[in-house]
Image 1 (cartoon, helix red, strand yellow):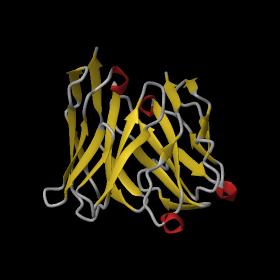
Image 2 (image 1 turned 180 degrees about the horizontal axis):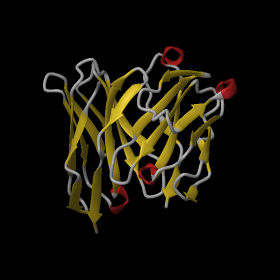
Image 3 (image 1 turned 90 degrees about the horizontal axis):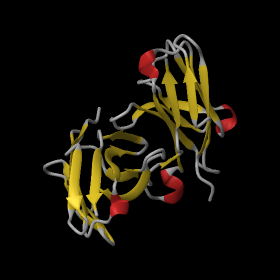
Length: 118
Length: 110
């Protein structure tokens, strides 16, 4: 099966500019996550979608970050305006519903988008 | 919420030796403990996982142990090879809510 697709792979912007990342999860995966991974740290959850609804966005800086998952498939994550501390790799992951598989599976991650804010 | 601590942050071993990475978690409700390997420029890849009803699981050279009472779990890699060099992350949680450790950079010297 195809993996989780993300684009772009790299992005360099100036502070106060805006940027958007795109994610296409594995076909049929209802749950989609956006993680922020700062250099030298583990991934930190930003937002979780179940189909096209938000399940958890408690750690999303909502004054500057927004995300949507229209039609419950692709998702976009936007930052506006960007700050220097937003420099990180933004990872998208997807997972199938446990009750369909009757198992808990780990997430499948995309390769991420490396954002540099200068 | 869940808090996961991982150590060591860096680990260097000779090829053929064993490597052990340890994690502790705080939420006793956590019932799923995956381990991920992340190579440079790639996303984390699931290498092994364990559920709370199991104490140990092995897959070829990789094994994971879980001590629910002490709330810690460990990754064991035997007969290490240079291609095992990467950053390893543990995670703990339940359903769709997982928290990651800070990672361990493993270097296997030929």
